[in-house]
Length: 238
Image 1 (cartoon, one colour):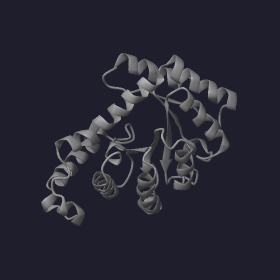
Image 2 (cartoon, rainbow, N blue to C red):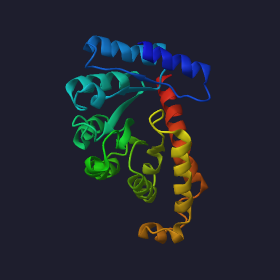
Image 3 (cartoon, rainbow, N blue to C red):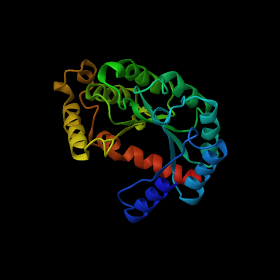
């Protein structure tokens, strides 16, 4: 509760800097308290997003407890958010697919898109599985952070080629404080510069559509996509 109130106070102090997101934990709390935490986060603190971290708190992402909490978050109009990486066995692609399929017309956020704290070798298969999973379930929103840059570029090209709604489903991020914002977003901007110059890019698919990444597409990935989702969620809650 102290952590959630800290987030609330920070967002109120710097409303143009932070989009607040709450946190609940069915492993550390009883189910009643975990559900109560969701109610406080949404109804009292006004958070549009409520996150669970199966890897850190050691429970399976598609467990019955998570499903019950997902139902609660959705019923209040907020969006459920999950740590989703290869750093533990608790967050496989199959588990995320279960949650996405329960509400196929409702948004869900998967943070790290298969990355997280795992190394390149451990993450490789989940990177591929995650990219394919997002194309099968257009309600999954991915936050790109703590992951391999080559896969990040490939994801952006794949989803941009797929068109809407997939172009709205990826958000660039830094994983601050574990990642450094100016380093990560500096890297994103240089990456987008190379993508905008599609005719000279080594990716064959991009060469066929050299104007695929225009200025608006880049702005969407760097901020507009998450802004639009946040607005949608606040309207949904209200």
